[in-house]
Length: 276
Ligand SMILES: Cc1cc2nc3c(=O)[nH]c(=O)nc-3n(C[C@H](O)[C@H](O)[C@H](O)COP(=O)(O)OP(=O)(O)OC[C@H]3O[C@@H](n4cnc5c(N)ncnc54)[C@H](O)[C@@H]3O)c2cc1C
Figure 1 (cartoon, helix red, strand yellow):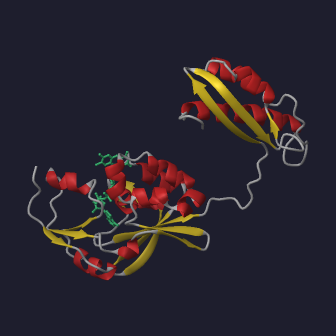
Figure 2 (figure 1 turned 90 degrees about the horizontal axis):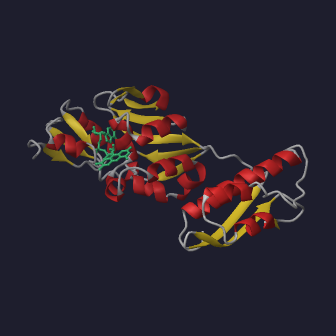
């Protein structure tokens, strides 16, 4: 369907956008991925559309003290490619990867996703888990709304009429130290459903990094199937001499080596290209 006639404006400052939004029939347009279909179906019929596309201040990710501040007009695609998000909020990157298709990720914005508040949407739940805070600006100034108070009802948020979501503030969830209790690196080459070649290396299971040779021997030439992989991985700690210290017991490290080897090899096989 063709949307009803609507006045269109593309302000160049947040203040100018807020001024137009004072009109109670005005509606914000971000990436249009949810709004345009509603306009076409005439389920939404504003008199003015306020396109935020020219507001460069609302795009991008920056670090502010311990927080990441993500502009409301930052697209899914930009979030996925942002090194700060990858480093400090990998959950956000992982969830964004699964949103829609390339076109939706190229146009859709984090602000649009949160303001739309679709209960099936990915980022509203992620913002709750990340303990995010929404930065909201209106004619009477700026306020912060925790994610726990932002989602009020079906497709309804705590945004008051005339208010704009300008940014999402995400606390840095990265721990300062990330020494592995145990680490596993695996590479494999598959040939016709069998494992033609496999290398598995373990960190922190001996005074030096070591190869899990029992696993490699058991799996070389075996079927690339969990019936072969699981029992082979139970042998990951064979021949190792892990430390027994304040961080973990030797027994726990042996157990972890088996669990992580299973995950690494399963991931390797599932994501197989030529060598993973
Ligand atoms: C084919 C398809 C597949 C999709 N798949 C998924 C999926 O797998 N997972 C998922 O989570 N989502 C999915 N979506 C929805 C998508 O995430 C939308 O992009 C998102 O819901 C809206 O973002 P937008 O930037 O396009 O906002 P718009 O559509 O422009 O706006 C949505 C609503 O939010 C308001 N709004 C937008 N920005 C602001 C702001 N800064 N301040 C105040 N109000 C604002 C608008 O007025 C409108 O009411 C899909 C959409 C499509 C079309």
